[in-house]
Image (cartoon, rainbow, N blue to C red; front, side):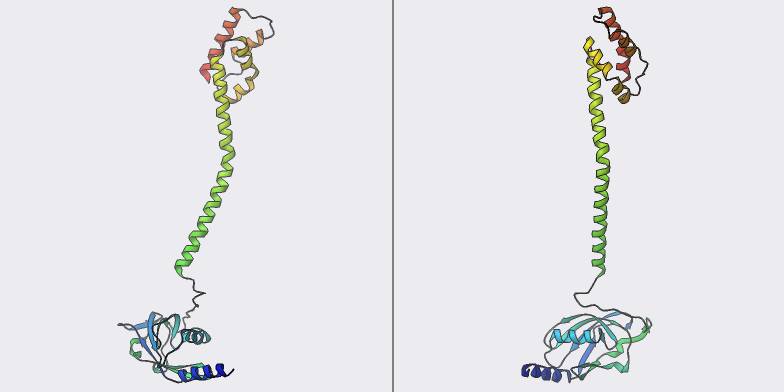
Length: 244
């Protein structure tokens, strides 16, 4: 407890001094514009304590809304902020440890009263809460990529079955074409006849009433087929060959 009390007394002694702010700009700053500020304490000061002080004031540092804080050395801080409204002639106070800290803007003439309306609100986030435009864009790209991948997977699975069916159809067509083109014997012709439903399905240009199938109907139940009739069947098959 004694140590905590000493730390508090030390912190209060720091806060009791006037703090100087300097606007880092060569041009006049309008209301609503981003501005960098150099903040100087008269003694060494902790970055963590200063951040806690800003958070306790909801990000407000007089006429500025703090966006980011960087420590330059023991007494100096670089503050990135949004200029909202100049009041009290550039002098303002913040309360810490039940004491008031006086802040004075060294070059307050650089701050204009013109620009955005003072009623405009600016929101400040801590380092862990900052969401930059780049981060939002990154999330958007990731989300778009995920959706694109999912659509690609759905498309792949829907078309996979069609591709497989087309491949099997090509295989069956090639097999039948090979059988028909090489047919010479009675067994070959009867084999084609037994698969006539496939022939009609795979080759719509083949006529169902083609002479080949009628001729096979005529001779298939005969025990023996003469050479003359075999040649007749073979000749009728030529029309099918030209149609596939």
